[in-house]
Each structure stands twice: as structure tokens, then as C-alpha cells.
Image (cartoon, rainbow, N blue to C red; front, side):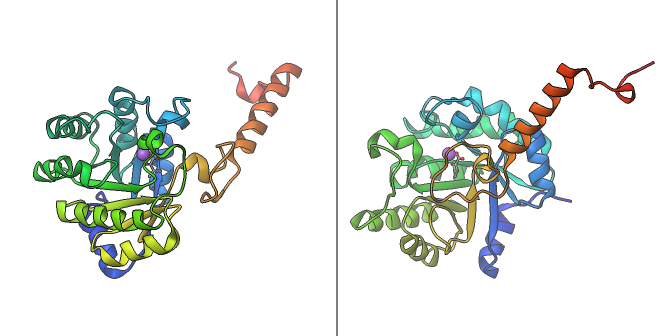
Length: 264
Ligand code: KIV
Ligand code: NA
């Protein structure tokens, strides 16, 4: 069974089929999501929070993300794996951006990269596409710019919506194969989705997008506090906490290990 490719992604839009994307940061969860049929796995710079314990995506580095991305590739068989380019690894110049994207593909086996921004990173996106690297865009609430936005708030209201539309069209023209729309009004996401021939991937962007993405720890109920746009599909924090408490109790009272867990 071969990997999902950019051609499959393009064909899904043609057929009007919706699809899911999840984040993954290690081999075991990558395998679980791959076997569940998730066609695209994103090794997000959200690893800054959910793996490394930072309170924004700003501090995470290429060196932090490369081993996680390689693990997700090793743990999956069918999914396309998208490597998120961290803050500061592509903004300074086309050369820097291209070198970073090339590192991710060569050192991790990822199949595509994602970068934040529209027209301001267009030269980088074009150079990556020209080099043969599929590029996923990311518009709206781009968390690497949280200090400019003054917090995590809805983007693209009013006149900013036309700017976002122009950015989306520019990314499409640059050769991007998909674009994430994060935390924007549903009506704007619907207009962008109808205007583009490449798929939109929504997160807090309403129901009209071609695809939807969530951070797995958010959708599985591991994250303590989540945004309004997150739906909790499981309560992994409770399952894991209960398992840890049961293990602790049995160790303390001496009922674990039992004879069947011991060698004689
Ligand atoms: O880093 C991330 O997890 C992301 C998704 C939320 C789109 O960029
Ligand atoms: Na990200």
C-alpha cells in the first residue's frame, strides 16, 4: 500500500470529498492514526506546547522537530507526512527557507513542508515548489505571529478578509498544494474554499473547508484547556490518569506483579 500523494489530495478536491488531517509527533501515535485511515499527518510546530512544554510555538527549533518528524515517517505507512517549518527557519531569505525545507525532506523523509504566511513568504514558497518540494500554506491565525496579533484571536474579519483571500490566491499561484485556514470566520473560509482549486484545511474555520485538522492531544482530550473550535472525541487524560493510579495502587499494596507477570 503506497503513500498518499499530492495527486490524491488534488483528486479529492475534484471529487468534492472531505478529508481529515491530524498532528502526530511520535512513531506510535503516527501508526495508530495511519491505521485509522488518516491520509495526512502534520508534525506541527505545536510540538512546542504539546511535546516540549513551551507556552507558544516561538521557541521550537529545527533541531527539536527533525527527530519527531523522522519518527512519524517511520511509524506510518500510508499517510503523507507534512513537516511544519518552525519560526525563524524560513523568514529571513529564500535561501534560508529552501535550505530548511531541504533539510526536513532529506533528514526525516517527510513528503511536504508547511509554512505560515501568504505574500510575505511567496518567494520562499515558489523556490521550494521549484525545487520539487510540495508546500502547504497557513493563513489566518498563524501562531508564529502571536506577538503581532496581540494574542490568539480570530483573524480575517472585515477588510483583513480581502487580504487573506489575496494571500490564498497568491499561494495557489505559487504552486502550494493546500492551505490551512486557522481561526477565521466560516463565511470567509467558505469564499476562499470556493475560489481556490487547491484544498483548504480548516481549524476553527467553519464547515465549508475541504479538509479539517486538529492537534491530536486536543481532539483526544489530553490538553487541559482548549479553544472553542476543538471537539473532544475521547478522554485520554482520564484513561491515562486512571491507569497510572491503578498501577500505583497495585505496586504499593503488592498485588502487582502477580505470578503471571513473573519469570520462574
Ligand atoms: O502546528 C500545528 O499543529 C498546526 C496545525 C494546528 C495546523 O500548524
Ligand atoms: Na503549526
